Length: 141
Image 1 (cartoon, helix red, strand yellow):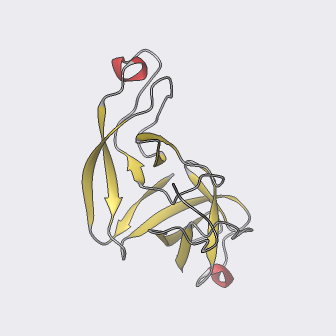
Image 2: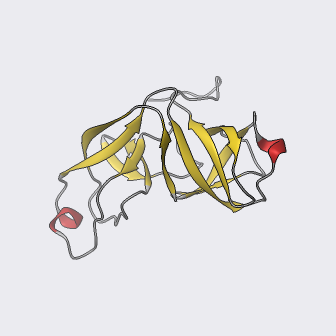
């Protein structure tokens, strides 16, 4: 899970992608103007975490609706579960990637999605979320 830890956060409302399920707390981004679960291969940094669960049986699954998204300011920190690699003090001060829409990978920093600020345990850390595309050579439409 990736959840707010410290700092200022706000709620914004964005339309969800239809035919996609979400669990409250999933890391999301905007794809063609609609929320989608975030993955490392996406062209933009994550927006924040969705604050609503959308199941295949919900109206929002078949019709795009405005959904609440928790967005951290630039200095906001997130508590992140580690699903790939082992958390250690040596990852503090490094950029890491996500493993999927609800956990991080401390073994890679290809996309530089989170900047680690604190080591909690072998399975958790605290990090700041990238707010701009960290890859200067990429082109974002």
